[in-house]
Length: 325
Image (cartoon, rainbow, N blue to C red):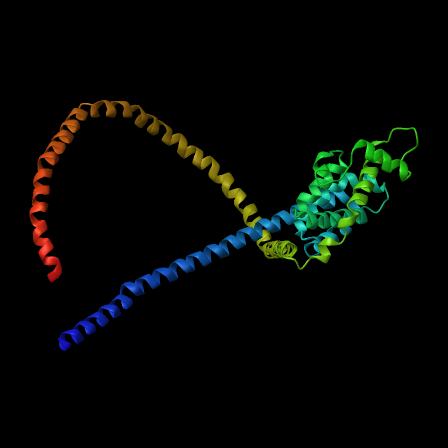
């Protein structure tokens, strides 16, 4: 029996080698192929995202330049450092800057420090977001609503920018003239002052807790978006050149494709017209198909008891063979 066992072990070992070298090797090859495909897909997605980020950054820079004019250089400089200071990618910061532009002119005046205003407001937005566990962009939108006179978004955080609160702040800080209603610009100045006063307790929270998980993730995500925009810059120029080069091709292909479709239209219409006739000729076959199905079901019903009897007759034989096997 020992010889038989050795032979069995050798056969098992050989089978194992065969599995590893044959099926196992094939699985390994397929795994490598899948891994390579996923890696290629990851690179492709990264490059696609990079081009998109570069395009968005370019558009945001243009919007800042158009909106802020001579002050745009200072705004762009703030955006370049916003990732580490505020947890905002440059594109996102530029977008917020454009949204706050209308308020800046009213709050700081025609020749006021609009760059300083935007720096203070976005920094306070990041601090407020850090304390309230919000996205910085969301906190900035809440601030924007408050400056526009919408009290509800800030009210749920305990910030009161109601008309009475704004009038009281204006009176206490010399905004407007006593006995005269505030202008819209003066209202915005008072709302901004009241907002900064009531959120003063959150000041510097983002920088003080920049090593916390939430803020560290914001900073990492913003820097990663900036990196993709930087990588996508050269690709963006290449794709822009390619797109421009394809315009004449598309212009040439348009009439050609139109001509092909016009030539195919009668053929398609003719085929469509023949479909009802084809369906009508197929209808007489339906009863035949139904009869064949009925015959098949009758045969199955007749053969099923025979098959069951055969299985039941063989079961004792299988029961005896199982222990031997």
